[in-house]
Image 1 (tube, rainbow, N blue to C red):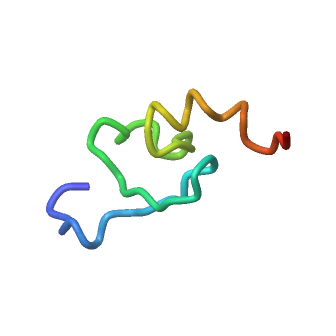
Image 2 (image 1 turned 120 degrees about the vertical axis):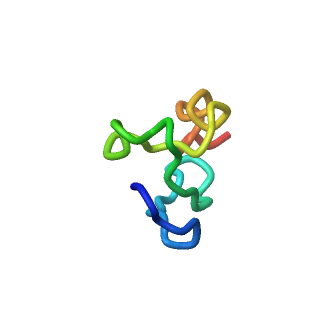
Length: 52
């Protein structure tokens, strides 16, 4: 991912909140496994799909 402009970085959609997020350097080696945009969404993944 060297010399790639910010507007050309890969994007994914968070499976919890549905918001798009872009590639980050800390996810370089595990980008294929990344599913959540933040730690908060990762912790709330169990509540997705539940109805009250």
